[in-house]
Length: 177
Image (cartoon, rainbow, N blue to C red):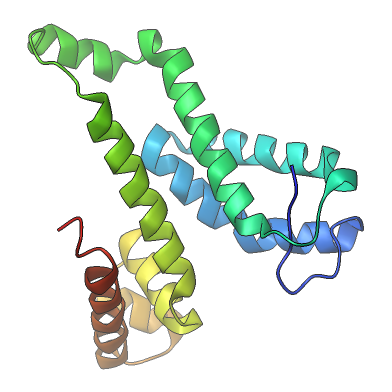
């Protein structure tokens, strides 16, 4: 596996790796939580991805982006977890008992995965403050007033930044809408 770390000359040193971990851990946990719905399992999956990255650090090519590798790895591990644990997922079993005639279309799951990956890619392109506000609103379910208080900004600023973020998402996801 070959990777590149943005704004970091190399991943071989512990400090750079720790910075990478701090930068992406929470984003990846939220990403995984979209698939798994269990925070502890999501953290475990992301932790495993970082351990794997650290173990492969000697084979890293600095010409590719690590962010893509991380999100793809988490995505794949989540799908593996779902596959391996489906028989133990009580929600799935409960739904199958309620609606046994429903045929799941695998292409729906693929499209859902594509959309989710695209959302996280778009999220990474947002300006830093806009991204922070969007994540607080959508991932931490904070109200605009709570975000304003937490960031020491006006509610109007939060509204403006959320409007900006949603516009960017609409423009970039119009093929799915």
